[in-house]
Amino acid sequence: MKMAQEFALDRIKGRPGSEAREEPRARLRRAGKDTGTVVPGAVLEAQLAADSGWLLFITHDTPFEDGSTSP
Image (tube, rainbow, N blue to C red; front, side, top):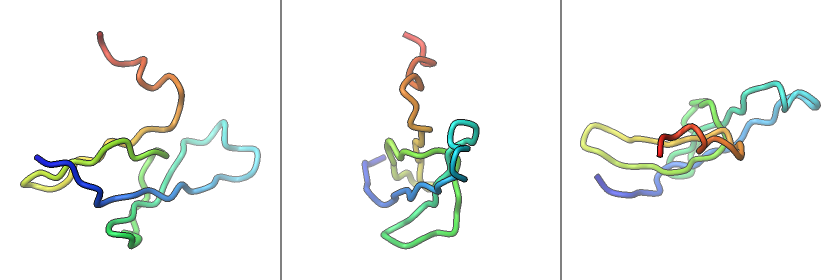
């Protein structure tokens, strides 16, 4: 696998005042073009190209997300 910068996210803004209750969502762009895909999450942390496709690591941009990993 290799590191690549093929994808990017454009966060979809929720209704005013509902940000705390709604799960963040974003539109997925590939090579600068909208793919038409909406994904849960807000931050594209990493992307890996593999023989069978792509692996995207997307988080919700919350400060304690990494607290769920084991030591």
